[in-house]
Each structure stands twice: as C-alpha cells, then as structure tokens.
Length: 278
Ligand code: A2P
Image (cartoon, helix red, strand yellow):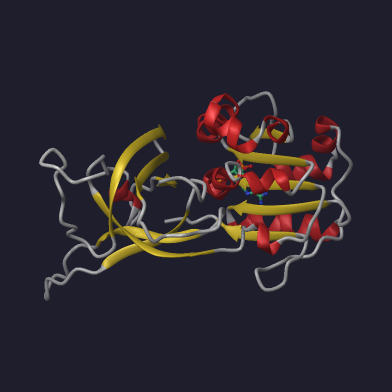
C-alpha cells in the first residue's frame, strides 16, 4: 500500500524494532501479543526468536543494553504478523515490564529463528503427539496452524497440562478458533482438522480431566480416553514443550516406549524444547 499522509511513518527507535499490534491478557500470569513481522523474516513453524526491550540505563555510563529472552513464535509461518504467548513474572527482569506493552509500543525482535520443534527433526509416522505444559503451548499454536502438521500424519493429539482452568484458555480458544475460522478450515482442510484431538488436563483446579499427563500415560488412562494404543516407535512421533522437569519426565517415558530423540541434523522419533521462563 502506498504511504499517504494518513499513514504516519514511525522511525524505529530500537535496534530490530517491531510494533505491537494487539495484546490479550488471560490470567494474572499469562498474556499473548502480536507484533509486526519483519519483511525478510522466514521461519519454520515451531521455531523461536529472541525478543525483548531495552534494559534500564547503566547507573554510571547511562548506556542501555537490550534485555532479550527466547520466545517461541506462536503464529504460523504464513501469518503476516508474529504472535507470542508469555508468562508474567512480577519480579522477572523482562516480563515484569513486557506485561505492560500496549498496541503501538515497540519491542526488539532479533530476526534469527532457530529451534528443534520442527517437522524436519522427525521421521515420518502415523500419529503426532504434542505435549505441553503452561506457556509451552506456544510453538504448538504455530504448528497447529501449519498445513504440514496435518498432511504428514493420520492423527494429531495435543495434550496441555496446567495448574488451573484459566491457564488453558489461550490453547482452548486457539483450537476452537481453528475449527470455526473459514479461512483456516479452507487452508488446513476439513478432513485434516478431523485428525486433531485436544486433551487438556488440570492439576490444581477441578476440571473434566484432572492429573499430570505423565501420570495419565503411566496408568494408561490417556490411551483409554482417546481410544489409541500406547505410544510406539513404529507409529508415533512426539514434540515436548513445558517446564524442565516435565520435559525430562516425558522424554524418559517416550524412551521407555522405545522412541529416540531427534534433531535437525538427525531426525528421529521425538524432539524436546524447554519453555522459556523469565
Ligand atoms: P502440578 O500442579 O502437579 O505441579 P508449572 O506452572 O509449575 O510450570 O506447571 C505447569 C503444569 O505442569 C502443572 O499442571 C504441573 O502440575 C505440571 N507439571 C509440572 N511438573 C511436571 C512433571 N514433571 N510432569 C508432569 N507434569 C508436570
């Protein structure tokens, strides 16, 4: 679109500046926001970038350094904006400030996407499991809006374990939204969307399905609920994104089933990434 008098052109005041376009708060600990996307930024769904704000001035020199953290891109690779899903830590160096951003504000975004939660790091399989806790849902929010996720598998199961129901909202809305949004249904395919299964659980507030997903796997309850066989290296592939203990526990469970961890350089049967905490 041509630049007219009606379109004010803002001079970026930060290195790698992008502009916030919308912000949504879910609980006192969780929010999501969207920012403009650098025209040259290409990424694979599931990857992360470094984002942040300018730090406080140095007390003596007055110099400011960027304060950056790794954030999974929650939007799909075809989206014209970038979306992020974040915790708010009241005394966290970055998120104590980031939680106050408003549309029109700028943040720093280093346009160098990397990560292991990508289709390239998995061997072909029949069923894809996406295991998340908390804000670990973010990379899956990207992958669930990528047609390849459904083209590559017969079934896609996403589990999300949170302490409280309110913490499931972002993911629940996103999944409901995919199935209701005409453009997304068209893009992903109605038959493909029928492959998607959502398995949310809470651990500290009453909900239809309670318990840590790890315990539900050990007891076999998740397999019974979904009517699928126990995970096996022949048919199942998995991506893991949550807190550190969770990642290690799921990894151990998957290795117990006989699956091997993959990487970009050596695709295998599952991949792990840690959630990015302040
Ligand atoms: P729990 O309430 O039993 O600790 P957090 O907010 O601490 O990051 O945790 C997010 C969710 O992940 C919580 O529901 C928590 O359950 C669950 N969780 C934490 N650690 C593990 C683990 N090692 N295995 C499975 N679930 C876990």
